[in-house]
Length: 226
Image (cartoon, rainbow, N blue to C red):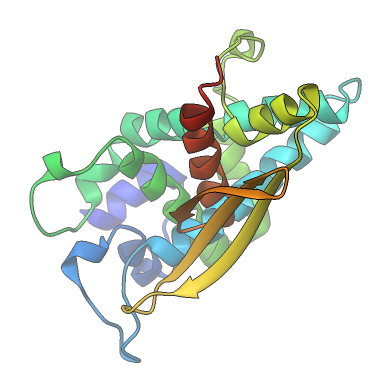
């Protein structure tokens, strides 16, 4: 059952099925592998996030030859935004394949995008870059509505607050720290400074997510209008 559902999503039979089971295992189960490392989707999510950004950036660079760096960054941010990934993960009912402890209602919407990124990470390891690229183009890039690329919705608070700083002559700095938690998870802390003065700290399982969380908090604290 699990194998067939994965095949329906990615388009072919997985070779290393254990990878995909790990991609759909939540940390709430508190499982360890043979080397006593946490067995869950978080490391695959980190890898999938990186591969996704590379594929989307490469695709836009090749297909939008008249767009400048700022336009490409804005479009990429919209395609890989948490809202978009959550919708795709929900569309494919990925949470139905997730093994976890507790009730499904405990999760927010982000779980859908998190699992999607973990799946991408599993495909990358199992089938290589080219097959992973085809999957990303099929389920993420091609279906993205082209008419949504020019709306005014904020998709990258980090970019917005940097622009706000430039406009108001405020120096914005994102300083990243890597920490290993008690359960051996790699956590990224982002310290946000304005004009060399510390404002706040936010944490996440990837550099990008910790920076975005810090930027969102800064919007609230500084009462910046969207």
